[in-house]
Length: 377
Ligand code: SDX
Image (cartoon, rainbow, N blue to C red):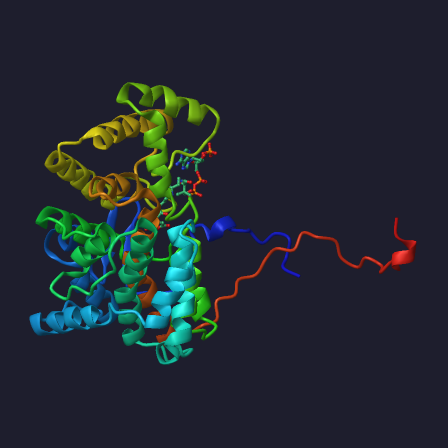
């Protein structure tokens, strides 16, 4: 038995579980780096496709390499007919994040080669990354009575995701806003869903199983599900002059305000800084700053009352909502980006495999005598 003095690190807080070259978070300075590149540079100059390439290959692509990846992802947008039929048979009232979790798992039944345990490759990573927008678009279009999805090879990954969900081609500004959001959400070191993917991969299970684990983990409101709940809070508040009263009442009841706080960042999440600006830009372009102005007030109140800073989930929903994406698709959009990071971490785990298996400090009884059922009261 472990010695009683061993310190338990609940939630594995501050436990260094492994070495990785994929992502570095400086929680004190509020910096986020993918494979050496600062997220602010990537958000300003890169694309989701280029960022995914960086995570999968460990370096920025040449123009030919990027063109080849873009072409490959457009080819992989198409789902097997049997998968489309399975999506069309899913209850239209199902939560899209649950549909996504189910569909990733089902897709492996139709693509055994890509999902073979251990043999999973960058090809599988590209397949899943290309498929997620199609899975979400196929399901949402059917439940909304929209026309069937086309592969639209001329559209970038971000623009295709918006077309898949909105049934219209996005504006340049919307495409850029979504591309930046996908870059910002692509990876984040050992967050809960990425860790779930690595635990799954560390048993030599396959890529699709690891991503299924990750989607189920991301759904939780303490993790990726927060962006949808931020919008519920904003709709509950209604007008900016009610924000202070509503937020203070929730804090007085020791409720969590979604979109604030972080296990690693002790200052503002650099992704929130960038998404706040996009919330303002898209709001101005649409002539609707309602959510942006509400969020600024909520930010002020939460910081003055609890000293907490916004995280990536605070502003992302306002950007998506202004573009017309339904709120219950916000966490699936987060997954459509994070699948690049999840798959990169799975491949890194395969390359330096170590079964992930911590221990627990046992606090139950020992040496109890077995009592026959007839003698139990
Ligand atoms: C994501 O890990 C990642 O990298 C995740 C992510 C990624 O890219 O993968 O960054 C994405 O998940 C961002 C986080 C989204 N979740 C939310 O916005 C939900 C609200 N936030 C919290 O539940 C919380 O901040 C966590 C879960 C994010 C982090 O919690 P910790 O590190 O376990 O901190 P804690 O729960 O111990 O809280 C410390 C104190 C507590 O106060 P006391 O009880 O000690 O008085 O801060 C308080 C908490 O009550 N607190 C909050 C709060 N977050 C922390 N109080 C009110 N509202 C909040 N949001």
